Image (cartoon, rainbow, N blue to C red; front, side, top):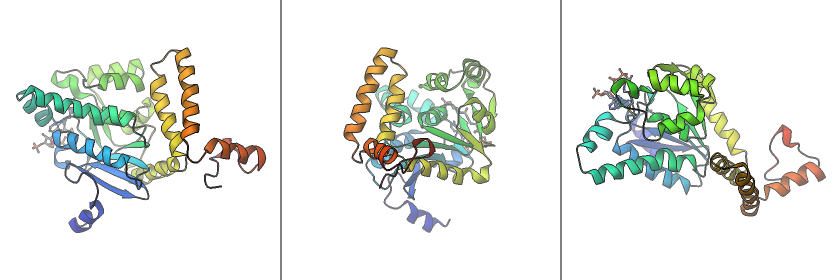
Length: 286
Ligand code: ACO
């Protein structure tokens, strides 16, 4: 793509420097854009991503977000110089502000983001990038992507909230193996471990991700939002509290759903006999 065409594609979008956004077919492609630094997460990416997530939440053109990286990396993790060394030597208040903004976009915003999110792992994925990956609802990797919790190799623990995230999606054996060895693994292994939903040849990565995004777009967005929020909250609850919460959440979702999906779905199944929930989604415009 020429620089001109590229500029046009991103015109009027949030981000534009460290993060590029383009919306096509209601999919917002959010690209970490420091390819020369393997998309290492510096303050520029942190503060721009907070703005991008805020802007896309309110943008009706964006129904699903895909987060990926420019060039040969998804992201090489936190920027060792600009995220760690320089802020560590500077004003502690500014460092605190940076850490807070980083937590905001990598998990506080992403995990509970009102729209579906997919991580498209196109290459290197290290350290802090695991948080972005796990913060997204779903993830697709290129077979030849390379993952690693490399922190142990240079004398720190996987921090931020990465250890907790990893404990959430990997088995204890796998989590401790990769935390303690720093070994790398490829996209297919990531799929076998359940770290990503599936992995595909690099040449198919974008189209398979697009197909997944489209599948999500067929669903009722209000119910999708309630379903993912409920999932994250019930993980920490007792069974009794979860049962109470889910009953209320279910009522809330029905009450707030402008398309009244439950009534449509039931009428189409029970009265019109025009659809079967086990074989696909109800006709949202029917
Ligand atoms: N922080 C800062 N700069 C980085 C980072 C990073 N995490 N990763 C890559 N870069 C920079 C390199 O310093 C280099 O900059 P330069 O051109 O100014 O010298 C540039 O990106 C390209 O990196 P290379 O190492 O030359 O690229 P290569 O393709 O050979 O290797 C790889 C890529 C394997 C990703 C390598 O860069 C690497 O190991 N990076 C560190 C990965 C890591 O351990 N991340 C965890 C950080 S800690 C955390 O996230 C909590």
